[in-house]
Length: 248
Image (cartoon, rainbow, N blue to C red; front, side, top):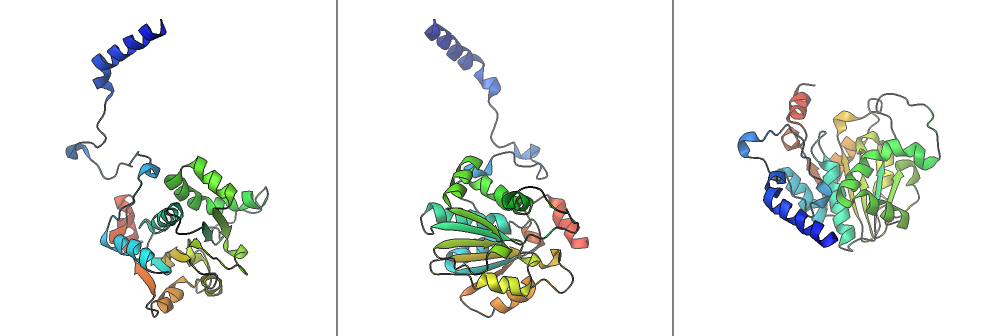
């Protein structure tokens, strides 16, 4: 009986299945760049640059041990850095990924957050988890975090550490002071890569406290370090983001 039912379902699928098949990519006349891409990007094994400067950033990460990605919001700085970190981990070129960002609120105080340390820090580190989830999937991400292969920590917990055999991403670097960023850069150990990402124009610190702009300028003097500057032309979010940033 079960086999008969299965054969009937197969026949029905062959006769009517075409009605349930949809094109993966819409026709060009129907394509609207303002529509979000609904495909799950974690299934895209190899990322590709959307602009020449993004490609320069990817090449710089492969060639240099320290890279600073400077540019406005939406240029893919964090996503590309984390994608390269995941690639390095999966190819066994590093033993772990270390992600850090300053725990600075965006212009408003949330007060005291409930829970333990991880729960208190979760809102600040959420963008890093989101990018990792897109590349790895939430289930594998949890397993790697539990095994210590992926470490996510605030800047305040990085002092005194030496990061060997690691791919380090410092996100939202514009929210760090000069002293904090200097401390983070000197954590670099053997067989490690460090990428700093940030937009000096979007710091939540008081005027003059952010050290990312000065740090990037000084690092440009060292030939073995790459400083990649992205612009509004490299924005891959909604087309209006670039337009708004040009007038705001």
